[in-house]
Length: 429
Image 1 (tube, rainbow, N blue to C red):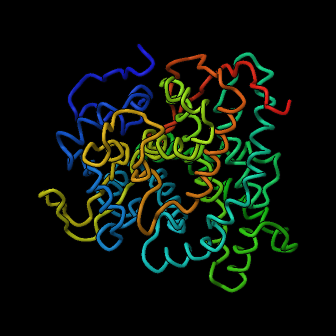
Image 2: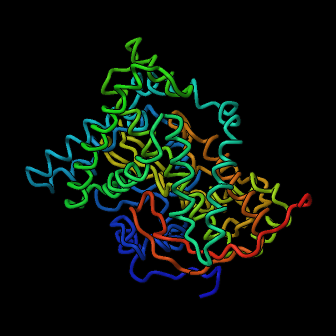
């Protein structure tokens, strides 16, 4: 297989889609052709209890419209009902307990609850405040690369992609460095339950949620007493003190920020670098001009789609492309298909770091639920790609086609082995 050739899965469109949504590793590793066929042949498509929406315009409308599409898809809608009907008593109790806790996440709430939770965090996640973190992100990145350069073959995933964003958000929330690997393990166990229909993954996720929740409750005790820390920590504690956040909502806010606060950037770095090195011309373009990194990040967000799709549940009967979707139906806005829509992006199936309209991607969502940490994710990605291009221009893959893991929504490579190569000397050295 060449560096840019994508293997084609066999079977009907529904067979291939079902394999992706079942989180089969091979299907997750190479979904592009299936998403392309979905968008071009069946842009509004029923698959069991869900409806897939694949065109950019339609996916954009679903994400923007909080009045007709609910973010409480995990407790309401056809998919949630189908999952509950398939579970035994113990599994059903675990499923409902997870749902009750996650209903306090801002990303899984609607209307007043969402606006209140979002308003609290918005005070801190501003582009200006995120930009102030650049020196810390640069320091972490250089520190990790200094360790990685001592290894003949090193793994981007374990050494950099998950560690950097987790360290940054953990710093913001006052989590000690020694406890961050455990948070990553809990996050992975919670993430594997995104499909919702794997009983074993469900029970593992339930245990992880309880452990994660108890851990956060314990660390909040001294944090409440000392009131020292970042702007984010201060804003959250003040919101609890003023009764804008209940104690359990504060716990949920910590959990979701630690859980979701590093996943998107992890995938942007790990899958993004894998794809960049598969398209050697783009890597060479970046090494020739590391200042191109912000544009490269936007194109990689479009190309990779770190979150492959977003779930919603219809709050009323709706019509998309002439297809009637009944109230209470689970809808998947397939970002990975929409982000390569040729109606929006010229030569959409080409990776191009100079693409002028890359920012029209939907990778970070849109509307009321637009990614809270979008500025931070973009900054972390920019620092990583700029630093790699500047310091290690001969960087290359040590494995062309690594296995994927996780779940269909947030697929991720198990590893991305690379050889950093010789370090480029700076002009002052």
